[in-house]
Length: 196
Length: 182
Image 1 (spheres, rainbow over the protein chains, first blue to last red):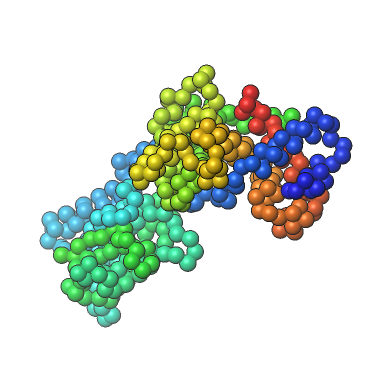
Image 2 (image 1 turned 30 degrees about the horizontal axis):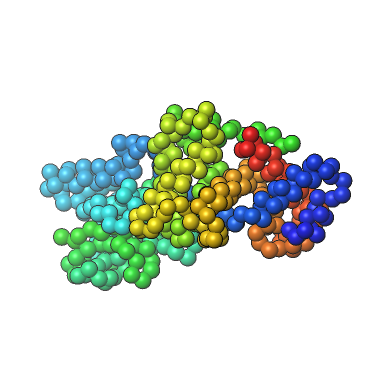
């Protein structure tokens, strides 16, 4: 708004007192820098977590609890696998938080292997990661000696718990860790889990 | 004169002190951009500014019980909380922060810089109280470099509408800023 435009905006029917008041605001606006156009979604999400008491049965605890209980039951009965919601699993692991937010979690469950294709069924329960904008995504991959070795699948997350189903046709003996990171070169590891 | 019908900042802080999440959310909606703006100006880095803003609101949640409405406005209390968070963030990098520096006014003394910072805070906080349609027009008018005709074209609304919203927005801002001074 230049001086000419301001006169045009205010018009010529404004009482002197009101005119002076509006000109003071005009001068104030000219004297301060612009605020950022918008607040980053990462800040919105971080602040949204402030003060929220986490119920004992959070999505993370529930997922880990169910998986561990099933694993214990499987071991107790010598079955070596268990079923949950109609799917069969062989192992479950809560991935260690690396550079993900402290209250984020990722539980990886390994299902059965399709003998005809060699595909492993993988189910991933993730919570606490920020939703990524279009074109950006997270990757679950296999590492060997701390380096990227094979990609198992990509995903994005929503609020709360996100469940992702994937397939991977690799021989797990060839790798030593599962890793989740953002899809970017040299992106830091968000979660990891050793393959034993 | 415009009269604010929304709940006052002071009342919202008191509700936050009682653990009211809705009040906290409303306080964040009102002050997120002013806090981020101040942090960006003084830290000069988006990531650190975001961290300082996050710490500000974490401190608001933790410390709302320390607020006393008889000692000052809610906006002034929030400004002080944000300022502390920004200084802490700056100190983590061992930056020398005797007063919050302001790049736009680096030739000004500490008192003047503090006044500039408080002024920007008041203006940005007041802008957040405007109806969205007025805030957008005022921000475009003062900080985009667009003329009124260009704003009309950009927003795809008649030029008369842009002028009306600008004028109404200025009048509303005048009322809000006088409330802060009161």
